[in-house]
Image 1 (cartoon, one colour):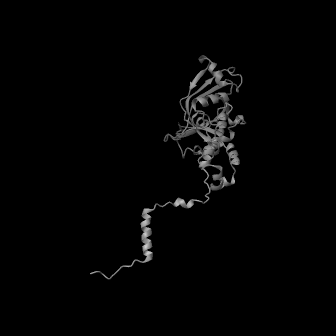
Image 2 (cartoon, one colour):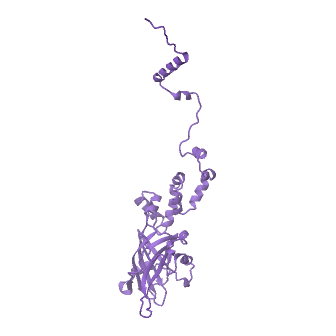
Image 3 (cartoon, one colour):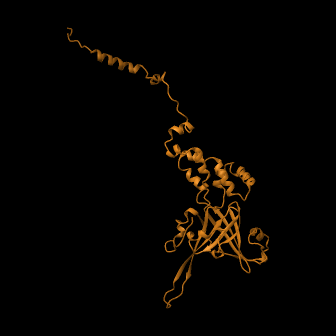
Length: 322
C-alpha cells in the first residue's frame, strides 16, 4: 500500500541545499574580484615615500633629514651612542662612518692621519665604529679620579681613648688632546676641584701640567714639581672599561717620584718623558710608592655635580671603582 503523504521541499530551501553542495565542489578565488581594480602600490620599507607618508613620529615629520644630520654632526660620540638607542631610523643613520671617522681622527690625533688609517685597515676591518669601540684611548671630556683612604692615629686624651681618623684624599687627572695633562692632589671633592682643572689655573690651585704618551692600553705620564731641586713625578697606567668603548677606568701600574738636578730639564714644557728615558740610573734617586694606588674612575663634566665621589667619608668610607 502506497503512502498518500508526500513531502514538498520549498523552492528557497532547495536552492540553499544546492549552494551548500556547490561550496564543497568549487574552490574559492577571492583575488578574482581584484581584476580591473586599480590598487595603489606599497612603497618598500625604508624608502623616502614610505617615511614621508607613514612615519608616525612627530619629530620625523617635522624635522627634515638634512637638519637631523646637522644635529648629529654637533654631538659627541657618547651622545651619538645614546641617540642610536632612540629608534630604528636613528640607529641606521648613525651607522654612517662619517660620524665615527671624525671622532677617531680627533681622539688619536697624536698618532697622525696616515698611522690611523693603517691601524684601521690592519686591525679593525676598515670600520671606524669598530675602531672607536675597541681601540684604547684616553677620554678628554671629564676627569679621572682616584679616591684613596687611610687610617691615622689621633691624639690621646687623658690616656683613656686612642682615637683614629679616616683620611680621604683624591688624585685628579685631566687629559688634553694635545698630549698634555693636568694633575692635582686634593682633599676636596670632584665638584669643587673641576673649576680649577684648566690651563688658566693659578699657582695657588696646585695644578701641575705635564706630558703623556699612549701605547696600546698603556699610558705614561710625567711632570716636574717646581723647587730648588725639582721632583719628577712619573706614573704608568693601564686603560680599561666597564663596557666596550667606555675607557672609564685606569689602573696604576707604577708610581715613581725622583729628585733631579736643576739642570736636568731646561723647560717644564719640553718632552719630559723622552728626557727621563735618557737619564742614567745613578743620576736619579727613585722612590716607588706602594700606597694610594686606587684605580682611577672617569667622571664626565656633565656628571660632576651628581657623582657618588662627592659623598663624604661618613656616607662612603670606601669606594670600589669596579
